[in-house]
Image (cartoon, rainbow, N blue to C red; front, top):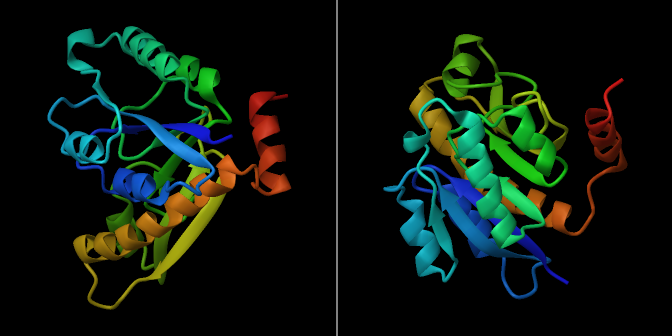
Length: 206
């Protein structure tokens, strides 16, 4: 039985597209919803063109009431009944209450070689540090921002004349390859045992 996948976006959804296009008839998962907190997100039209149900939940009417926004988000996801949630450029930091409801079933992709450079401006930070390589990571979402167990990583050499923009463009190519592989592994229950142990520790902290 195929796993049901919901994808959360805020923008153009290039990683979303790579996930959707990977989920063919032979895939262990299928998309059931693409949801954006931005009504004008370009990824919504791309998802609809692929026959995937879309939804908008604008965070602005909730003001600073993050709990109310996340309650509405949780309710909409419950309607779609996903087995897996993929964050694909979803530009909202999720609170502990929401994460606990979906922990172990939620993936995120981050444009650095975690645990390096959590948060924003990852490519410039790698350049400023004089790193020889950068990359991207897919990880399970836990209560720590960008701190969950790493499912897969891809590495990209930093070239002498790289800028944050040129590096980001090459890393994005790897993101589009990496995220579908990680989703397939989770959907098939093929995550390494070490990740399962890390996840268990995150679920039941001492």
